[in-house]
Length: 123
Image 1 (cartoon, one colour):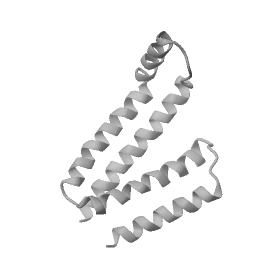
Image 2 (tube, rainbow, N blue to C red):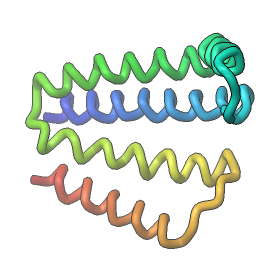
Image 3 (spheres, helix red, strand yellow):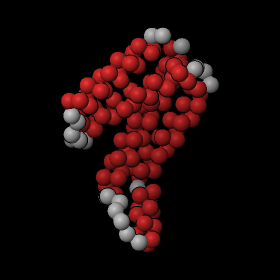
């Protein structure tokens, strides 16, 4: 069971890193707004050729492969709640390092998610 939890944590870590890279890449690419077909074609090219976006997608893909290994070993009802930790960690990193505003109610929600994962991991 310890190895399975380690794989779950590894998968979630890869997904978190991927998500943070995707956000950093999109911060550099810029906001995708409205425009004509040429605009969207240019934005898609700019987006999918950005190194952070490419690396973020690669990490997300690798996370999915590790997740498939996890699912082959443990019940989904056990593994999936751990994904909630990803939400909490991304929220904290976004607040701390990306200077995104996070309200007290979000922190309380994150704490409740973390507590729920602790309860599930002990069952």
